Structures are given as structure tokens and as C-alpha cells.
Image 1 (cartoon, rainbow, N blue to C red):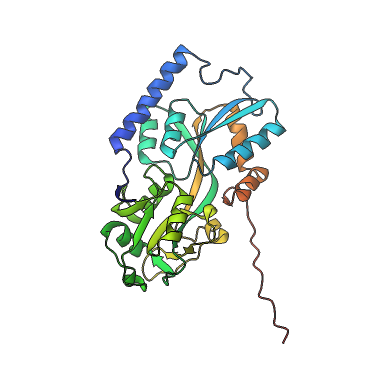
Image 2 (spheres, helix red, strand yellow; image 1 turned 180 degrees about the horizontal axis):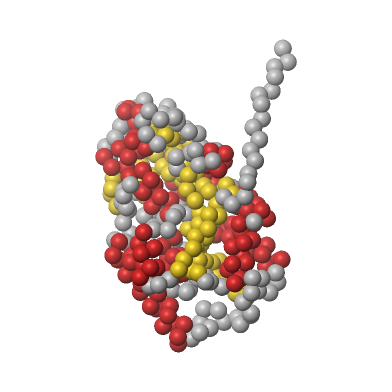
Length: 316
């Protein structure tokens, strides 16, 4: 489906009003029914109680696995994971519908401003890193693009692959919905603005983007490194024309050498539930970071060692 995509799910003031309204609603709900959110009256300690986490769809399975491991260690803990967009997850924390938000971006200025106005203290913890892969069809001869090239593709709308050493055909961007944090991240990092306005193909998620790029020879897409699979080609990226191009792999993401490296953050109110503090401590520990690694992302809070194999010597 070809669409003219504008990344602006909410204007600044609209989103600010949503967050402040969530704070008011959360206060009214708490005043009327103190146990409306947590009906289980277990004692809240570092290892017991009830915790609600609002997480983005692509990392929800990792959070579920982490929560289940925590519950096995501490049977008095009960953790529920809700699948939410990054902005909905943040609104849930503002409204006390969730105790912890897990988002694939930094907190936004509007969120920090709304927290200040509502006199809410919030804290974010780096939990995982992920590279945003720039992908094309396997037959495309182009191997690398700079931020300048990508900025032109995402704003001009009639850019030819011929400008980058490819065929003289129009680049067809494939973009996820504007509510996805990956799309928001791409807009801010490459365009330094809140919106993408270009003729594009809209795909629901990483899997749909990969499928579309694999089908369309002139397509260009953006997906999470953790979602990559055969059938597409991953391009090297540089921050500007003339600067070195960096290949996407776990080590370049860990060292943040790859230009499109983003962080997943655990965001909570301060003070929050004691159980929330206990779970954050577990999630950032070495055992907790193994779930990040097993979820095909890069640990962000523990040291990681990378081993590169040397080429096998020839026997003749």
C-alpha cells in the first residue's frame, strides 16, 4: 500500500495533555479504589508483591521470560507484562496503570516536561541496545548509505538509486507506523525532527517490512537487528558523507560505533514499588542480561566480550 506517511501521532501539546490527563485520572482512580490496579494484596518488598510492566511489542517476549525467571526465584512475586506502544507505556506509568515502562528510545522532552509539571520524579535505566538495520533487496548493488543519503530519501520522495551507484529507479521507502518507537527513532536520528513525510509503503512491523523489501527490488526499509533474517541485504551506514561506513553487528552496536544504535530503557516512577526496584536490579544483572542476549539484543549493563575467529590457514 503506497501512502504519504507523516510521523506525528500527537503534536507536542496534544501528547503533553494526554500525559497530564493520565496523571489526573490515575490520582482519581487511586482515590476511589486504592486496589483497582493491584487487587492482590501481597506485601510489597524487593522480592514480593505485584508488578505491572508496559512493554513495546518487540521486547515483550524478553520481558515475559525475564519475569518468569524472577518469579521462579521469588515465588511471592507476581509480574504482569502488557504489550503497549512506547507512548502508551509512558502514559500508563504516568497514570499508575503500570509500574514500569520499557521503551526502545530515550524519554522525550515532552515526557520530562509533563513529569516536572505534575511533580513526578522518574528514572530511566539502560537495559539493552539494538541496531536499526537499513535493508534493501538482495539484488541491489548499493552496499552503503550515509545519513545525508537517507535524509534525502526520506524527505525528497523521488530519489533514484542511481544517485548512490544503483539502478536508475526510484527508491521506495518501507516504513512502520508512526506509533512504533523504531520509526520515531529513525525520524529523530536521521531527520532531526518529529515527522517523516515522503511517498512510502507502510508495513505493520519488522516482519512485514522484511517481507516487503524481499519482494520489491527498489525498496529500502528499517528494522530491528534482532528481527533480521535471510532474504534481504543489510547496508553499512555512516553519520555523514565522507565519514567511515560501519557494518551492523553485535560488537559495533555494543560499542555504539554503528550510527543507528538505540537503547531500550526501563522507566519507572521514583519512588516506585519496592518490587519494581527488585526486578530492575535483576534485569540489569548478569543473569537478567542473559535474557537480553538470548532475545538477540545486546546487553547494556554488563561487560560483553567478543571473540573474532581468524581465517583458517590454507593447507597448500
